View 1 (cartoon, rainbow, N blue to C red):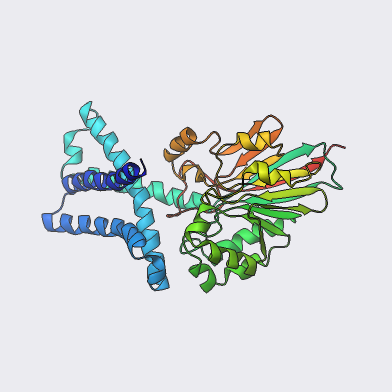
View 2 (view 1 turned 180 degrees about the horizontal axis):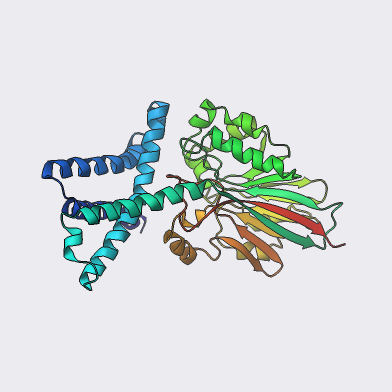
Length: 366
């Protein structure tokens, strides 16, 4: 089954490239030589995505690595929307809404496609940088000395595209909250720890003015789990790997290892060592089997991983995969929040989704 899905995911971009390339060739009102140059440029951009996997950005000079990473991953999203746009135009032509001349050697067609795609991705890029503050207010019957303010984040994906400058802005936002605690539900690292080390991003994390606890995500494993763990220690991030810690004698934080680790502990095992008279927060990167937290008596689970698809209509696929692909959910007495992430994988575009961080205020009613 895995081999079949690998073949499908390999073939789909090739089919998409062929479909878009043929349409672009037919639509451009230029000489064959100039059209060939444009098509070659498009293929080159997309081939950078493959280069990322075959060569690896760590083996390239830093500036070149960032260009290859950003261009290659961005081209994947551009390809998706070009396929959708040309499918829509083909449908319009089939029902005689779009004239055939619009798709053949057409200045009007070429400019229309260029303007639509450019406007869409300029918007998507600007929207990505708008980090939405999501307030949550929970009450509990469990004792707290005072209301607790907790900033929660996931999916920072720091590396070749989310740089130290980006991280510095996020740290400033977190510090402005004057929180008691910062929790991160995985994927701090994108695909490699090297750019984080080169830029000394650990120094930015050390500026955070509250204790930081985190769980691992799948990308932290892709980047090399031992390297990620060493970076967290340097950044003063307390990593919880199938372990828990009691904060301020009244709040228990459980960090579950990512499901990439096939030998991670069950939630039942983790909860067995926890004093459940305290309010319990579970950090579990991938939001699968949410019923486990309800059965285990967890008060609040915070997850990420989905990015809510990053762009529409991938968000619809996420909704089909996960019970909760984005936002809040309540099951019994357990509250959940699945974050679309403050950062992003690949090209910096948010279309139909958002980048966010969560500010939780927890108050005892006793």
